[in-house]
Image 1 (cartoon, rainbow, N blue to C red):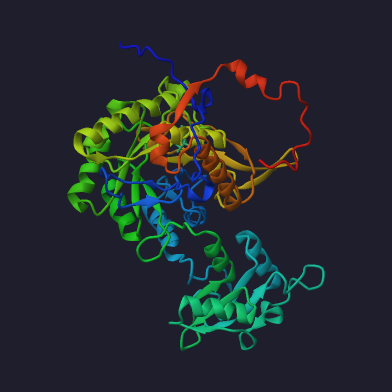
Image 2: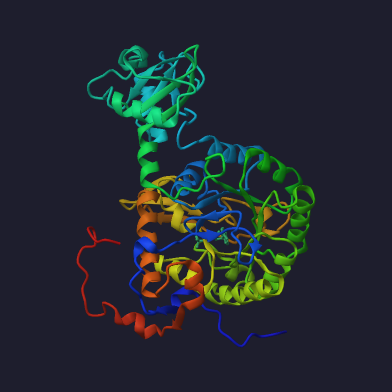
Length: 497
Ligand code: IMP
């Protein structure tokens, strides 16, 4: 047996030293964009993201709703693979369908439905307006709109029909198919409507344009979109049914795939990479992992991985280290793999981006991971806490939480990820709750402000510069205790986090 001389360390054991911050190094000059897939050194990656965050390939994290929100903010979601191929492909297709401009109408109701029914529909979807069509389908004849301000549980009989309270089509602005997005947005403002129905010449609903999308588009200038202006989205695949899953995801429009496994240093992963290369050449991009040392990186890079994911055992819901004794502190794993990535780039002229996966407990850990050389970060717990994640919102002891469970938990039973055969014999993850943290949009912007601020302190305006010039130092336990040791904290309800 070989025993490595150094200790396995996590992000929390390091701090960064400031470098000289020069005049131009201000937040508006900081570029957080990152390469996602392999490219020649000195050239641009064919897939970049404006914000170096991707969502974990997990059922509690990556749904179409979260994928859309994250793409709007400049990141990328990976739709989870622990579900039938057709369902995963449909989730990918739903993200691609959801244009920021003209969108498929997903909240529709018949005029004969009751106010109670439309109220339930809106509450479940957390939306304010439903579109009324003759048959309640997204392609039915457009009849009107009904919103939460059109009826009230105290003033109206919830058994009354939608028709009795809807705003009928005759009094609403609509637009014909073929209208430009910019004209549609002008109409929305002129008509003071939140929703502009787009109808074909037969009066059937074709799509809708939302005032909120316009506002979000103006707010989020960095959205991740493909060449057709559809949101970018990734998808997980496994080493079992890839011959069927990969083609279905490609057909659904996935922009990039990623092998989803707790341990990616295997010939199984190499076989999948070979399959993708033989079938699609470079037209389909696929990441692999997870690995925790240079050997694993080199193996997957040589097998053709477009990016490599780093991390075993560091996830917040992970118990792999206890169960199997496998893993490595995320900071040590990353430092080792970064060395190998850079050596590989020097030798081959190919830059294979690294994704640091899991183990981020504080926003500062993201900055440290990026300083250590990660190109982008995969986050589970971080995104699970937001209202856009698919997991249920629950109240525990009076506090709001989102449920969050590991893919190796009994709840997920993701046997394909854990190489335990057809069923999960023992658990590698827990099933729990994380504090509800509100909207992804608000939180991501605060996190990015923190990462930007760290980079400025380190005198960097790009992630590349940050990788090259950051200096990390190990911290003693005592130096952490020093903060606030003798200060009693006030109520943090109004604190800026
Ligand atoms: P987090 O961001 O610390 O919550 O970690 C998320 C990462 O944990 C995921 O991207 C996976 O790599 C990993 N993961 C997900 N489910 C499990 C599990 O059940 N056991 C171990 N690791 C898991």
